[in-house]
Length: 87
Image (cartoon, rainbow, N blue to C red):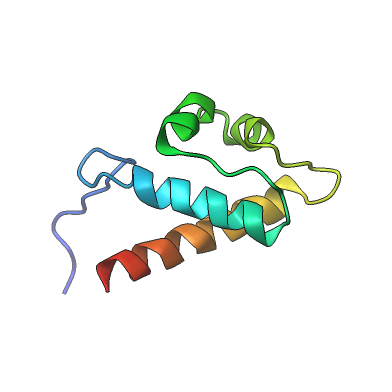
């Protein structure tokens, strides 16, 4: 069956996913052995576009890990966080 309607939720429009994003960021920082962890308020202070600049504000060092690698891992972390919250 072909879908007649597709809904796209753009980060918080329909689903408040900011807690998932904070969790994914903090887990990724731990995986890559960065000492900093962010609260919700701190996350809101550093988040922004372009995403590459947000990663730099979060403290990632692209000379150690590429933006492409980190972005891919972040997408996996967010999906994993989402599945854990639904369980």
